[in-house]
Amino acid sequence: MNRLTTPFGSYELARFPEDPRDRLFAWDAADEYLLRHLESGTGERGPVDLAGAGQITVIGDRWGALTTALAAHRPTQITDSSLTRSATMANLDRNGIGTAKGTVTLLTTQDAPPERIDVLLVRVPKSLALLEDQLYRVAPHVHAGTIVVGAGMVKEIHTSTLRLFEKILGPTKTSLAEKKARLIFCTPGNPGATRPATPGPWPLTYVVDEDGGSGAGLTVVNHAGIFCADRLDVGTRFFLQSIPTNTDGARVVDLGCGNGVVGTAVAVADPRAEVVFTDESYQAVASAKATFRANVTHERERADFLVGDGVAMLDPGSVDLVLCNPPFHSHQATTDATALRMFAQSRKVLRPGGELWVVANRHMGYHTHLRRLFGNSEVAASEPKFVVLRAVKRREQPRNA
Image (tube, rainbow, N blue to C red; front, side, top):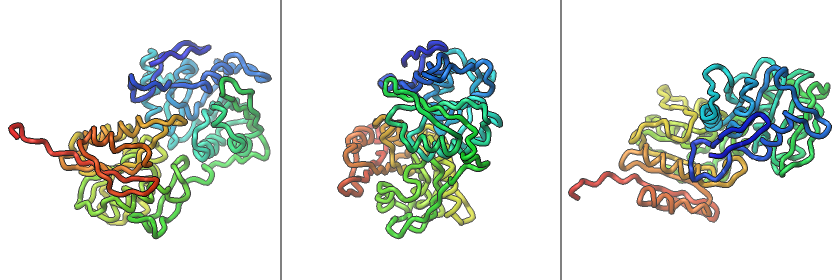
């Protein structure tokens, strides 16, 4: 845990789930730059009178740093990440703020934005598609007097980023860089800006081609922000060549489900299977639900769709098979922390004899972690770039054995 000092106060902040070994902060220079600007102004742009500004909406807050610092002004946070939502609640609580009295309103990317937005603060996400979708969603709710300020690290802000602000909201400029961070200033009301009442081109739909293994012929629905939105990504394509689909009515988890094509492939192949789709992204779970419903036509739909921290919400020993294509990035940071947490959670929820199947870039070396956790790991399939690994939760040995 670390302390962020801002013009609005000093706050103890941590990521979620909190891990004392994690050296990554719950904020970065872009958050600091934005908060400084709101208080004192930047260049030709003066400070923002938040006390009399009206409704404040924060989009893309990474771990709740912005929402926590601005809590006195009753902001609304909109996030695609359930981990961000949990981090925000934990950070508000640890700083004595809380959400019980309506200090902060927490919304997801699947919720309707506030009816009127007077100050719009945007942490630029890694996904340009997600930014596009969110700007389209809030565009009908801003007005000519709305103050719009974006923030991101220099490496996150590209010409395409600025074009989206310009196209959807209005004229856009950027600040000078400070500590490799930059601000975006946008003035709503450009007559040429697109101001639709519906969220742009999303979701996108495509059909998996005949080389898609057990996913061939499936209709896939991708909401904005899902990796590889218009086609099957190469890692998932390779995974679908290898996963077991004759599950004999097993309880199967599509962990980090994304658009849900892996779990849906199992459900189509084995109508008796009970499939649980889980992801920390609200957009992902909405995509998985849409993909499942587009393909599963048998009467008894045995599926659950859960947004949260991996499989932490499932009972121990309640699952037969976990299928996982783990991420190795947390926003812009490269890390295996999320994957390792997924593996440990999987071992806990698997029944004795249950299996975890993982597809990953070969260089990640996940086989060593699986052997440490499960006592075993074998290569189910491999190619130069990707590997599919299988680990089995061993049955408990008799005490006298």
